[in-house]
Length: 81
Image (cartoon, rainbow, N blue to C red; front, side, top):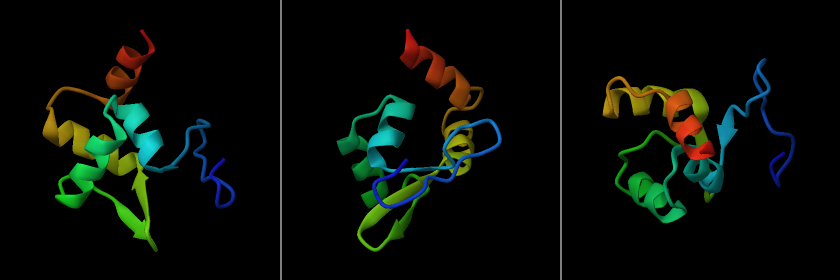
């Protein structure tokens, strides 16, 4: 659950919205790298005030377009090793 309320969760139990730390963990990037990509508008994101919010579905599409043939599931599995 997020610090600011109830987290949006999909039918599979995965969070639909992520903060910078969660997105970094999911993608295997540092938080600094995520913030850099946001600043350059190279990764899909939204702002809620000063808070950066990333949608899991948009990250999946972004990853596929940035690295054809690589899925979010593959990236997640690599991080679990």
